[in-house]
Length: 319
Ligand code: NAP
Image (cartoon, rainbow, N blue to C red; front, top):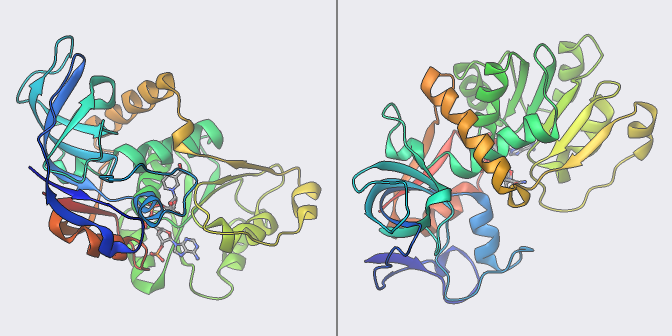
């Protein structure tokens, strides 16, 4: 079968399409014929070799995918032919097939395409964990989703709206703000426009949002601390470097700043989160949005695209 193989860390060009032996499902595992694969920013950090999590080379990237069960090992609850989405494989998922522990596969609802299934694992679970477990989101309060147009942002918008929050979302450019309006945010702002943080204050009667889900803390944390409401919570989901802040902003308002890494999700949390997501897929409140699609052979282009501005939903690879 074909798979992307990384033999040395580096730029997107190290992602090479190769012929590799087909994996076999052991007890409790399934072999999934993949139809769509989700690309996450973390795949690019690990590929570059600069991330805290180091991959063992040769390495096939990827965590999120969807497809058909092609073979089921003993003790797997899945049946051959079932549509599934997966979060994590025994090897990576940038491939035509992957072996997955049954606990990391979930039935793909009929209403969702394989591409939508590939947009769930990291983005929706991250958004869910950031909003509810780390952020303690409550009906009726205002959340600023700072970076709402990408994979995690769109998921966070849908989850927050469905939980009855007022959502201020940011994206880059007028087209980004228009995109956010189209997915139903209460207020859409352009994070490239100087002074947009002041707009957040205006929209909240100078009180500030009580919850901020932050996708780029190294750029925004100082402003977040400044504009958050008294006793507000800021959840750091994304950060690509250090940032100077004024801790007094946190002190004077009793703010809570929490980091959140999906890698720390326990098995019990994973079960709870995906069961909750299934309700949203069933009632139509959660609908993954696909931004750009690339053939598996063009994984390098997808890696360049996911780090470029202009995210509009999830980037997927088609094997
Ligand atoms: P993505 O699809 O590439 O989206 C990136 C988002 O960041 C877009 O909405 C983009 O908006 C926005 N952005 C760009 N400049 C910004 C700025 N100055 N202020 C605020 N937002 C800005 O990536 P993703 O999958 O949604 O992931 C978002 C971040 O969370 C990444 O850094 C990723 O590594 C991280 N992440 C963390 C975890 C975790 O466990 N902690 C899990 C998943 C992802 P425009 O493109 O419209 O400008």
